[in-house]
Image (cartoon, rainbow, N blue to C red; front, side):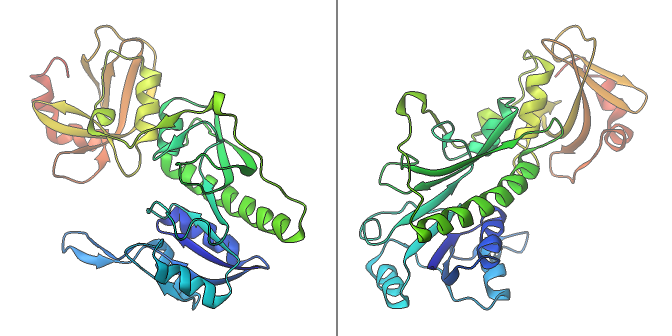
Length: 305
């Protein structure tokens, strides 16, 4: 089947890679315009664009994929379906209704509809999530589902590792869906609206650590926001991001700091959290031991966070 693909970050690149290894032909790749990034604020290509160019594919970066121009291009190329994975634009008419539009969503729909399903599932302490291959409709993440594949969340997984797992699973599921559609035996099934719920984009409030919560919930928060967003607390008024942590027994008095040799621990509502990898405001990431070497005297003056 001749298809188009729309995606932007690494998750999308994993999906595109699976399509390129399949029997289907990717006629054109759509991705978001290059964005300024890094200290020099130079335009940076998306992960999807880099892969597409490496593979010699046609790349388009329109302000709106839903425009008549984009629709006309796909018609001229003989595209039979548009496949989408983490593209970053909401699809609208005239695109919707012109050709089938099929999305890879990183949850087991109808659960975790919305903007941050991977982060939210890990933050909630879920033991499993998954990918759903669905029709795109005007209302966000409500389309009928072709396939849903579960993916387990291991105790040491964070959002980054889950995007890798889900990207690989999503690529396989999308190829299987396209195979089934082409062969004529696969049909989509409407979602059960009684089980649906949405999750919002991550906000600074979601990043802030509340030490009154149980240690396991704070660790889940840290994992869900790692390795790109970051949960944070404040030490003497300065933000300290926590990228990796472990739950340990004991603890009394939420927010109380404890330094044991080269270990930095914080008491929580239940249990204690050992901070393993942190990032002081304006500095690079480092181990807790390295952080303590430069801040031990400062921490001695602070009894709690």
